[in-house]
Image 1 (tube, rainbow, N blue to C red):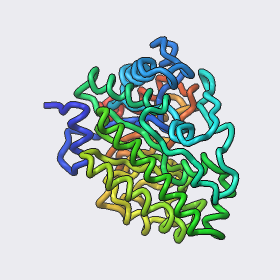
Image 2 (cartoon, one colour):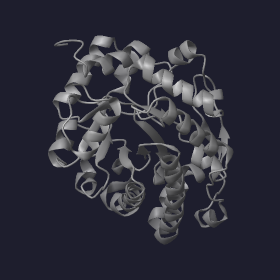
Image 3 (cartoon, rainbow, N blue to C red):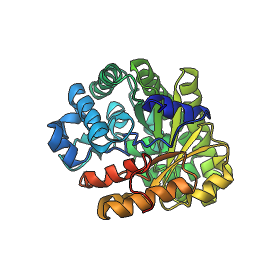
Length: 342
């Protein structure tokens, strides 16, 4: 007997048997709200970033039309930054929201930043959308997406200023990261309270390629673990996504407490799985193939990810809103036995 979407994914997270590999796209930086889904459902960006019903219904449309096995919100990585003082360009139907202006210019100014609160208007939109999704699809896992600490920090101050501070003023930079992390925990707990089953933490700027092993160990791992511990203490599950080549930081990745590590297409999935056998590896279907290739090539890449050890099939990173819907379906249908020996 086939498991429900929610039971299947939770079983993977808990190390229990499953009938097959789940296929998901968490949301956040890894959302599937492509233009074809917007046109088919009538719920589109930028309105779907600003109104709970639009956000929820677009996420449901992604699940139903793209055939993935979760719902997830929000569709960007700017909610926390805006709640903490950044000016945001909300984007268009085909461009995601982005930071237009940083609230601080020097690392010492971090103490002037406001804290994230549940009543900030975009935070409250996400929380209400989660509640709607929880009510409408109880057998589908609801994923809340938060920005990783490094990526949020570099949305509040110019990235190079922050990275220089990590080297030259490490105590101030780490104090700033601690403040950022505490605010992310507030958001994650509120998402779980609203009905999210899983929190996906995406930290594309917190890559070992940029930071190097030593800084990654000091400025990424402890803060991701602090968030993960808070999620687990609130009876939720955590997924961590890190971009870039992971080979330089494989030993440090063993220290992550999240049971699932989502990886980019530039990293060999088999190598990561061999080095981190205790972790569920999620990914890593190339977003380039999803955007540009034909469905058969996408399906072939998806099968290769599973063959190499993916315990959860998913895109390798964020995709373009112009990605063909049929390519997303091709990825999703592989786990259900379609596309044969492609």
